[in-house]
Length: 150
Image (tube, rainbow, N blue to C red):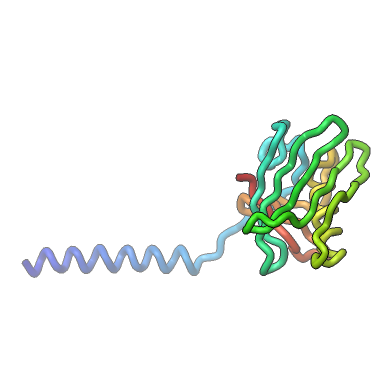
């Protein structure tokens, strides 16, 4: 009986050490620019793409991007389903914002527009990076939002 308990204690100690070491040891994140044609990016040729993400530390959102003849229509909603922004990223690079909720600051609306414009563009941009299976958008070398395709 004592020998059996020693084995259990030893296994528990090893599991605890393995868990602590994996938590404390730093991990290296792969970093690369992402474009719509990049095979590991979340952008693809699908007619509809759905994303989950966060802006800053407090605004979690969902976005639906639908391919249209002249570009991508992107609707951004809060986690509760409230429409925050509706825009079109045109093939020529211009962005039309059809709707932005009244209490959303213009800077936030501009960040969403800039991010999706860069995300769906044909050329790589240093502002959009794939890190740990999330696509981040950087401003002044600081990530301001991230998305993950659902």
